[in-house]
Structure formats: C-alpha cells, structure tokens
Image 1: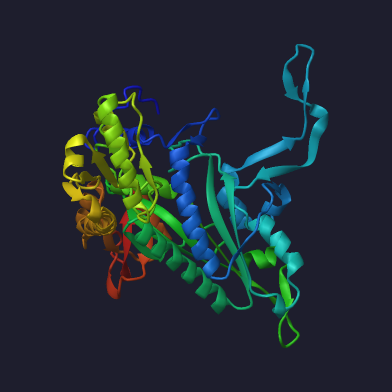
Image 2: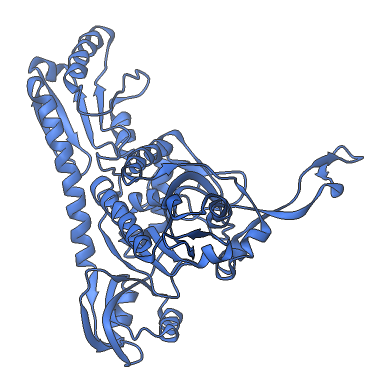
Length: 491
C-alpha cells in the first residue's frame, strides 16, 4: 500500500489503487507485519470509535448488554455444529503449542514438549463458545430471553486481503441472543437488521438494500440470514451487516434446553448479528472522490477544521486573536480542530485536510478579519462562501446537515441509477459486465444460482424485502420464478 508521493490515482485510472491511495493519503491505516493484517492509525480508529459509540448506544437501547468472551475456542466446540465448522474450516487459525524456548543456536523455537492436548481455534466468530456458556445459563423459561453483545476482534485467514474490506484480523461487534420461541427469534433478527440499516443510512449516508440471503449465501449454521447490501462507486456490492436467525441448530448442538411454562423441555431459538471494520471500506468507497476521503458529518471525527493564514509575526498575532473569537462561535457545532502549525503552508494544509475528508474548512486571513468574517469551504462540493462571525455557528450547523443529507441523496440516486431490471439472459450478462446491480427473476434452484455465478461472477446479494412477489421466468433456466432477486459482483 505504498504511495510515497501521497498522490491519489483517479477512480477511472485504477479503482483498486485509488482505494488504497485514499487510505494512505487520509492516514487511516497501513499493513501490519503479518501478511493480511492492518494497523489502524489514529484517524482511522477515530472513525471506528464513532461507529462503535453510536452503534453501541443503539444496541443497548434494544435491551442488549455488553460482555466479553474468550479469544481461544476448543477445536471440539467447532465440530459440534457440522455446517458451521464447514463454513469456517479453511479460514481458522489454530494454536497447537503453549510455549517457546531457545535452542543451542540462541534461536527462539516452539517447545515440542508443550503441545496442547486439544488444539485451540482463534475465534473466527463466537457462536460456539457463547453457546457453550448459554447451556449453563439456561434452565427455565424465566432465564429467557438472553440478549448480549460483544465488541471484539476475530481472525479469518484470508489469502487475498485489502485494508478494511478483507483482512485476516478485523474488529467488529457480534450480538447473540436466545429466545423461547421461533417467533421471538425471527422478530429479533429482523429488528437488529433494521438497527443496522437505520444506522448506516442516517450516520454513514450509505444507501442499502435490505433483504434475505439465498440458501447458498446464508451464514453457515443459520436457518435464515438477513443482510444490507450497499453499492460501491465501481458498481460492486458490499455486504455491510448481517443478522441471522439461527433456529435451534446451535441449541441442539450444545444442548441448550429449558423447562417451559408447562414444565416440558424445549430447545431455545437463537440469533446472531454483526457489523465490522469492513464498513469503513464501504464508507470510503461510497463517498470519496479523486481528491481524497469524503466523510459524512454525522460520523466524521473532526467536523470542522479552522486554518489561520499565517504570514509574519505581527500579522499572525492579529489572526490568532481573531481565531479565538472563531473558536468561541464554533462551540456547539461538534468536534473541530484549529491548525496553527507555522511550518506548513496554508495551501499544504488545505490539501491535507481535504484528503482527510473533513466536512467543512474555515479559512481566516487578515482580509477576512477586516470584514469580521471567515471563508467557509465545503468538502463535498467545494462550495466557498464568506460568513460573518455572528452567523458562523448557525451557518456551519446548516451546512453540516445539508452535507449529510446531500451525501445520502447522492448515494441513493447512484444506487437507483445503477440498478437495472432485466428479463433476458443477454441483458443480464451485459448489465453484470457493466458492474450494475441487477434485478432479475430466479427459479430458486441452487444449481441455477451456481451456474450463473460460474458464468458471470455475479452472486445473489439478497431477496429484497421491498421487491414485490411476481410470477416470472428465471433469467437463466427459464423455470418458473416467484420474484426478482438482486444480483451483483461483490467484494
């Protein structure tokens, strides 16, 4: 991810390189020493902290409480739920020894005598270890529901990695619940997907399609998986969050039973749901441009940056004194930064903060002071205007709201423009090759789904909730179809 000149490649030239350049130019992250890992730098982590803070509040409002479960999982736990382990087997990192030692050459090596009796898996997800605990917590209907969430890291040994989008280790939250009935579990899974959708739309200004995953695309070990899918500027889909109705699969595997109100034994019904640092990749690719990162105000770590135009000692004192008045007027608009560095030119500062995607830049120079005003520049559309000091807070707040609304509207408009309805295989192939979202009839046959993927690299992203049921003919096999589903190439 090296870009020594800090120059950003354009999206048209090389979209993949553009994405990497944005991350470096905005100083969000860099690769770690272990292949596939990343170091999330302070500015990138500040975005994650805002996501975490806001989403955590929303999760707690639905009645869930935070916990923490161990990183290491006994291998035997994963073998209890066959479909689950099959889904993660190729991505699991395995701990086999518990000690190192020095050899005769002074090298650090694994102590062969310290082999574990049972290998441990570094968590790829926590269903198994959490359900081993649930089995001890549940005995009566009075113990239900259990509503918990954890913020943690997970490891999935990826071969092809890209910062935020796909890394061997990433951060996320994962919710896990247990209920007395399937109806309660289904309601929970749907409710949490709506929490994600509302959060992504209102704070990240991303336009998503909510729906159910096909049988072959659902989470391993789930009865049903629900998803929100976003379209990136290159037309590919990004799975932005998922919520799973796990049915009784894990309950039966881990013997999680309770006495119901009729004193009969029942297995619990469960859900799990999560959002990860991958959403930052989606945030970058939804809004950013060829000049750098663009951040919606509702999630930006810094909403406003104030840049004094400093030239000489005498003038600088006057400018900085006026900046103090600007600071007083900005209280209440959100987190802002004053860039008073005197060893960096104003132009270099403008460029740096533009690359970081700060929603509003305020410039203060001698000429502005004479008019008791400042220059305000919007990051989203480069609009520049002179604003009087007495109107500054009001104007900034109005513009922050307008930036947020405008970015969301732009994302919605883009998604609608790039969503194509097709009825023939020829149309389907053309629109998929053009990297569009495609709504097409599908037979519901897994074999047809696999053949479509093999021929076009397109997968069923979801069966959209808002897509009406309608009789049709499968775009590939000509078999009867009950509704259109959403196809796309995806990250």
